[in-house]
Image (cartoon, rainbow, N blue to C red; front, side):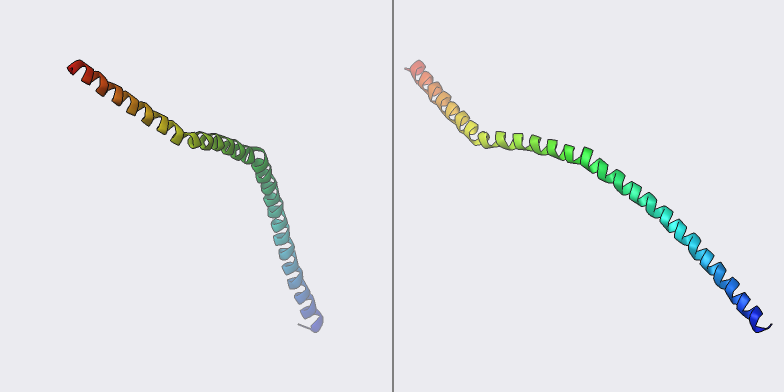
Length: 98
């Protein structure tokens, strides 16, 4: 094999390798396009659905928190009512026994 044939053989090998690299690069580009499409889809879903649901959840949570702030006052009112009823019951029992 002379030098020209060796060079041609090497060029053919390199051409094959370059073609292989081109094909792999095309595959990577196609996959990247798919990933970009998925990312856009996920971003839209986050913006339209998840953020809305989080906002609604936060609003509902705030309502519960507001109600919980009033629970100690309501408990105190209930305690006062029970104490009053207990006192009145004892008074009625005393009255009946006398």
